[in-house]
Length: 278
Image (cartoon, rainbow, N blue to C red):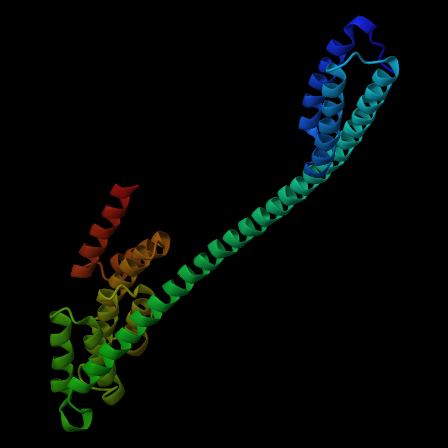
């Protein structure tokens, strides 16, 4: 119990009311209402005592009321602390949930990136297929434009394919020379058709196929005057494919087997070019 000297009784009562006001600021709304009601009753008692000379018993009653209010305030503070702890726990749970959602979002973004990469690969494959189909379509159109083999002479079929080659229409030229060789495998111009078929693939940049077709000149027509030219072009095709050693070997064979030919001179020029690049 708080002692107050008799001559300071009224002053003590006033200070008691003032000291209780800040305590009410930290309570919950329900408890605040109860404390305000208690404080109002206490203030009424103080006002009553201020209008007269308070006795010791009166002061005792007031001080007990003050102690009860203080106990209520302490209880309210404890409840408030508990509520605050619950709020902090809820905030922590919310933050954990937000972090988990962030990880899920990052995983989704990574998957989207992977799908985009896969889509790019599929797009590239689709473009290559479209190019291939366009090539087949052009070859089909060229074959339609060629006269039927049964209705033309070998020279006409050969000349039509050769004109395509001279015009830079290498795919149509290849189609024409293939038709000539299928229809007239022993024709007078079969060796030349075989050679120009290889050259048509060279013009398309299909060097591996060109090597195969040019190689058939010597296999099928070993006495042809196109053998030296086909060997020269095989050497060039290997070099274009980055197979320099194999290409140079073929060029040396041309010089050794056909030393007096124009192809031997061209082979020497190719070899010199290779030396300059080293």
